[in-house]
Length: 175
Length: 284
Image 1 (cartoon, each protein chain N blue to C red):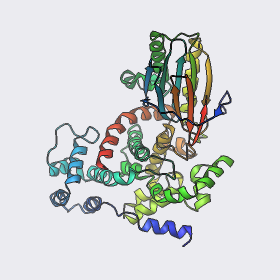
Image 2 (image 1 turned 180 degrees about the vertical axis):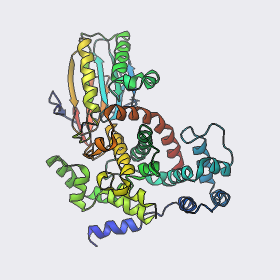
Image 3 (image 1 turned 90 degrees about the vertical axis):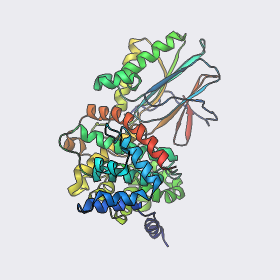
Image 4 (image 1 turned 60 degrees about the vertical axis):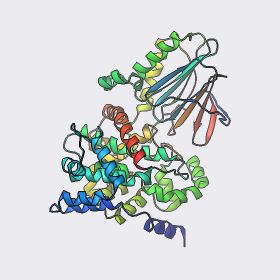
């Protein structure tokens, strides 16, 4: 996948102490302006941070797989496992919490892949495609992204400032 | 001593296989040995007894009826399952450790190992035919060589990082270049020293080059795919990131497609959580 960061991220140290963790196949919405959210180790998974500076509401979702149709039973138990079901509910909950399309800042990370010429493990690429379609349908712009490649990323959302930071191996960048 | 000799000496001084695993293994090779005498041996180890009962009653390995005695647990589960559990509880301590050289916290290395073991079983379940013997154990132990290699990796991490930046080579390729051998080969040496079955040794040795596993290609291919899935899901990605090649023949040889891989990923997540918790406690 030739889709490394669309915006050129700026290097910096995290210096953040997260107080809330979003697990794999989970989401979290925060209305506490002192929170620092984190989701660890996105491989091919998709991580989305949303922050609305006006509403002072933000959130992270960590989706594993693109489409719920691959396992209907799982989708009922764990809708946030999938981009299609998970992101839809995530957006709905964000809107209910006061987020508006016009002021929401949406950033994404992850969608990486092991080195695979057979495209057997193209889960990351598929996650990204499904997400982009959803954003298109919802008329939401993706403000920044750090996706693809063969690296795993950890994502922080700093509620006080609305900044999204990405850590991979020992490097941290702001998105 | 040069580095190669030092690595070899570290393999030789690696902890012995847990005693119970050895006994269960002997039992598996000698069908005349009875469970009662095996249970007698285990009974002297209260920690292991408790762990085996806990595992036997977990929904992961468990049957529907509650098992209260050790002997009942053994009979119900059979030697094969018991071996898996004995290895799992026996090596949990070895796997639940920080690998600074590979950039992994203790929980991350254990999680990667458990993920691969569970995913290998889930993959086999999605395919025709019975799962190969030793599948779970091969998945669990596939990266045990990293425990030995960690100190060498730590000393060379600057070179390794530079190599990774300057090339697109896979991480095991970089290990080979820097050390003359990979974590997979070192792991196989450890298991060979433990006198574990040849299939297990071959699967660990070839888990990044499954087309070279000879008679054990199906087992090795499943471990390889499970390992790739673990990295895909960000389990135990440290210094190496996701820099591993999916073997070129995999899809064709296993007749597997992306939707199956995805379904396995989803199902593995739930099943591995319980097991990870149990093994983390077993290693305390």
